[in-house]
Image 1 (tube, one colour):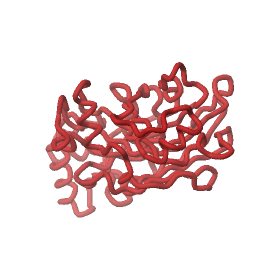
Image 2 (cartoon, rainbow, N blue to C red):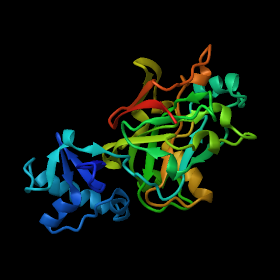
Image 3 (cartoon, helix red, strand yellow):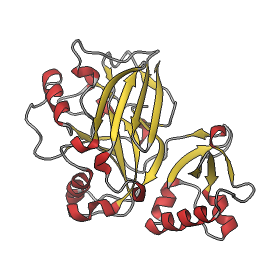
Length: 303
């Protein structure tokens, strides 16, 4: 399934939708017609467990593209929000998870040139999340080094505590696109949360693709452009720690719960790694894509 959180109009509340061709299907209204009580939010749908995806997928397939009146509308007519507009907890970020990014970071950001032996974990607060096309804020009083990082994000579907790598992907609900914005000059004593956790620094979306449609998350191309110029391009195959390793590792000490988000790291090509270095400024536009999931486009605006 391809799931979105959307508003039909500016005044309407956020709703959970499923993409069906060029339509968005309101799952709660659709379920009410079909006698199945689907919720109206992404987090509540995730809470129902894997069976909800199976049931909803079958009900949608049975309609053969013809849906009950009042349950679907053109996707082009709605406003997409972040799939999880307000995460319950901080996003788990993974640093230095692609070999070439380790090398470029060591040259420009004073990080170690040695490959990490364990995942490097930081976090981004819920207030950093924005949805498709929303502006990324550039606060010149805080940063002169605003940077980009395209990433695959994994969303947890069922509680994971002390899980093995072999079982880890069974706990993943689905995947989305996340751009890990970073104010490189806002790191404090080696800590990253203020650098990476500022308002608007976690663009997310445009949808969640459920895990049954991405059985192997290590085969996806991902890329990012700035003002139409490609800066990053790689494949998730080149992660140092794969998605299953990340879920297993975090779960050894921190219980992962439904709706938790893991941003799995970025490949080389960030602004800090350029020679000379490149930074984002108001008026710039970044566009990031993960194959099979979708594209995010965001303008940079003055805060």
